Length: 67
Image 1 (cartoon, one colour):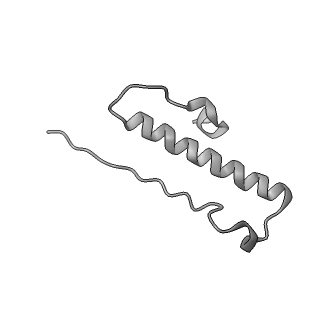
Image 2: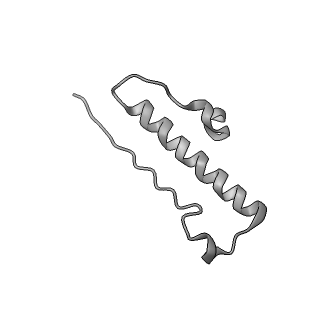
């Protein structure tokens, strides 16, 4: 018997409007970097769970490279 599952990732880090959060400078760069890493992680998980074969973007982010 086969069972399936679906995983949905929701990125809430940095999802607020930049002008409302008043984040500037280095903190803004860090928030953008975190969001990019989480997007890449989502793409890796999606590629791993996909039935079709293809490139898995492990090396596009430090986070996914570490995992």
